[in-house]
Amino acid sequence: MRVTASQSRLVTADTPWAVWLLGLAFVASGTFVLGLPLVADEWAGFGIWERLGIVAIGVSHLAGGLWTIRHHAATRVELDRARGTGMHRVHRPGVRQAAVCRFRLADVRALHVREERDSDGDLLYAVDLVLSDGRNLPLQSHPAVNVAAARERAAEIRAFLGLATPASTPSLG
Image (cartoon, rainbow, N blue to C red):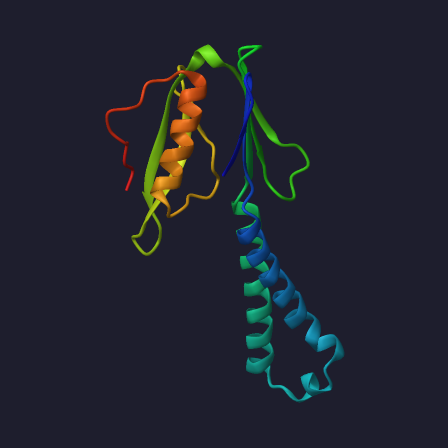
């Protein structure tokens, strides 16, 4: 997550480029495998199980890549102290319109570092903004392994908003 701040404005941006590129590699490999029957002379000599296996691999790569790209959104948060407003924007690839949430800075109640576990059980950390109406706005769509960086970013945003440091970090793990 990248944070850019001035006297009256703070902008955070989190775009999961590495995850999107990984997904794109799977989309490309799936497309390549599914396109092989159109150009490979050997295709005619394959049996039904070999053909089904090749199609299954191609479809799996294509679907997995598309899911990976679509599942990880880019987030952007703009906090404007001069106007007293904030905006949280979530953009998913393939969706034309970004989801936008506008709020007053006076409605921000907390900013915390969220802990969660990945599929291997390893801890991941993400920064979340909590509003007075209970909404939890994630500032990162893809949690990171570096807790120090997440806490540093959270402290920077808290200082901009004039929020107190929490006594403990909430855990969802």
